[in-house]
Length: 318
Ligand SMILES: [Zn+2]
Image (cartoon, rainbow, N blue to C red; front, side):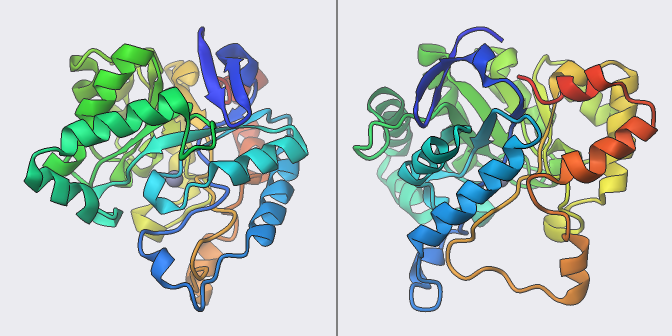
């Protein structure tokens, strides 16, 4: 892919991204975490330490770049990402954008929607962050993060899609999405492409939440890339098992879609607020939800199933 992309340490040619994990979070908190400050007090040093460890672990497998699409209101802190990047040499791309309505802090822009300024406000936020950097840090987002709900793109979410399309046409910035349980992927692609977004600059995320091969093909035929980016998340948040992901992936690889598929984990290396507590069964199911699971456990399975090294590598390059 041609062009340039902003990382937290500055602009690089997109080809220099090299081997990339397209969707991992160094830190993440569900909106509301900032109220739980007594028991969930933020330990910055620990967040940096955990981030550096994760970065070093990932780099052992040849990864040069991680895209961290943490939405603005879910604890995005670009200066911490920059510190992790500078300490390890891992290139990190951060985002601008808001989460889907069901898990978002929606009140802020809903209020502005009532006042009639929300779209302009979202547009101005995207432009200011892309042009001048995030909150006075000078660190620029390399992607716009968009998100939609299960089985629908709500009017609230649609505002972000519309404004992102406009900003993309002005700047060429890449767009990466969240689909809930892998639904609405082809619809997201259609909304963006109809608005004039270059399909090669669109990554429809979390598509591995959907086990319908025809639906995947319908989405891929629009020319976008899709994320099989939740390896290790099993059953939690409506996710399928890794085995099911692999089965669908192999079918798409049989049709030579490897250049349009990106593999990742959607790992959360440091939780903002209190980390979630899980019962034994849930904890067991997500025991491999960490950012080296693909290299340790999934790629060996793909090899055994006859997927070639070239095809495996292709799914880590934009
Ligand atoms: Zn995510």
